[in-house]
Structures are given as C-alpha cells and as structure tokens.
Amino acid sequence: MEIKISPSVMCCRVEEYKPYLELFEKVGLDSVHFDVMDGKYVKNVMLGTTIYKDIKRLSSLPVDVHIMAWAPEEFIPYYDVQPGDRISFHPETTAQPYKLLQSIKERGCRAGLVLNPGTPLGYLEECVHLVDYVMLMTVNPGFAGQKMVPDALEKIVRIRRLLDDYGRTETDLLTDGNTTPENAKLMKQAGANAFVVGTSSIIKGLDVFEDLYYGYKKMLEEA
Image (cartoon, rainbow, N blue to C red; front, side, top):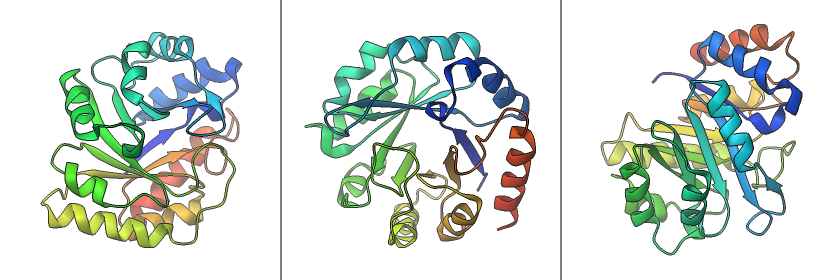
C-alpha cells in the first residue's frame, strides 16, 4: 500500500505555519494532521477554529481533523469542516458512531475511526464498511512526546487482519504517537501504511524538514 505521511500542525510554532505548509505542499504530503481537544475527554485544549481556517486559507492540502472530544458531532459544524477534508473521532465519545460516520461522508469528507490503546476492536468491526481509514493511537491520547505503548504493534496486526478479513485491504491504517523512524519501521512491518508525524520524527526545524521527510519516506518504503 502507498505510504502516507501527515505532519501534526500542533508540533509547529504559530509563526512557522506558513513556511511549513509551503514545504508540506512542495514535497507532496498526504494531508495536514489537525488535533481538536476539549480538555475533558483528554486533559488538553487545542486547536481552535481560527487555526483551521488559516490552514485552509494557506494550503490546498486536505486537513485531517482528529477530534479528541466528547460529542464530536457538535464540533464538526462548529469548525465548518470542508468537503475533501478528513474527520476522525473516538467511537466511545458519541452515542451513535455509525450515524456519525454516515454524516461525515454526507459532508463530502473521508470518515475515520480512532482507536486508543484500550479501545476494543468491536467498534471497528461494527462500522468497518463505512470507514475510509482507521487511526490507532500508539500512545495514550492528549499530549505529544510520549513513548509507544508496549502492545501497539500487536494491535496494528489485529486491526490489519480485521480489515483484510472484511475485504477492506485498501483501507488506510494510520498510527499516531511516537512515530520515530525506528518505531515507524516496526509499525509498517506490522501493517500500518500511514503515519502522523511530529517532533519525534520529522518536525525538527524548517531547514532540515525536507531531508528528514525524504529519508523517513524512503526508509518506510523499503521496510
């Protein structure tokens, strides 16, 4: 499957948004990862509606909106997420995850489920024919800079097997959390093909981004 890389904009300084977005487009990145946190589901608060609008104004890349919040269905119209973007949420945060996936697709967006380290795969199995992608949190959600949880690789294997069993062999499997080059190689070998990246991988400075990106992608393609 195609290797896809999505940098997390929360790892960039505000003054770096524009130059980073220009670099993201230059190298042909898959999307820009955008975290929404409500301070309740996770003990952190970010990113705001104005930042989403600024990214849409500054870049033509799809925005991958990851909602870490209770009642995610209330955030989607509030942010006015645009057709062509991607919206993912944690299924335990809403009363009707199946219906929410349907409504996301009706907006002209790709729909994804996010599974935490302790989230049962049953949520995915019940919605497998609706999801355009699956994201596995390989850390506990809420803060950057954490280490990959011990059983993350085994869970990647189980998710990929479930997708394959249902004939969803082309469904993207993303990983989010501590995607260092060393970890990302193992994640790819376990069945992931898409990676949310931040300061532990390639967001380490505007002057080194391109070299790190091309090296990271080549490493994954050869893994």
